Length: 108
Image (tube, rainbow, N blue to C red; front, side):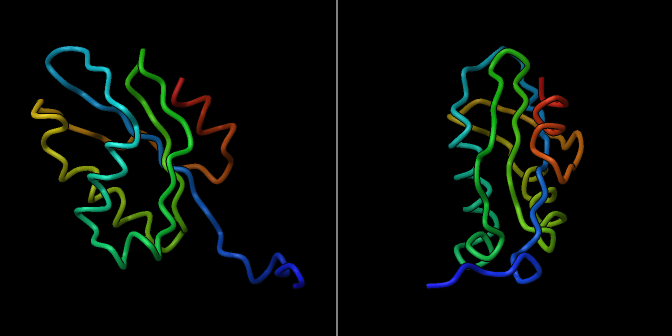
């Protein structure tokens, strides 16, 4: 089977987010992606190609990979998350990058 030409591959973006809570919490980054998938729905999250790329527990910042067409839906879904593991949280988007290394640098 031949590989896809670069022009046919979907372009991806890396969304950097920060979790704010009353007390520091050891959130598993997979739980954030699961919450986003439940908000976006099965089909949209599959088309978006959501994937956890990086998470720093000290700064509570993470990076999620998504296709370019679904960046706005991901940002909205992150904003709608109100609780993780029965703890009240608010998640804000810090930035969007096309390069993983730059996104990791922003995340800390």
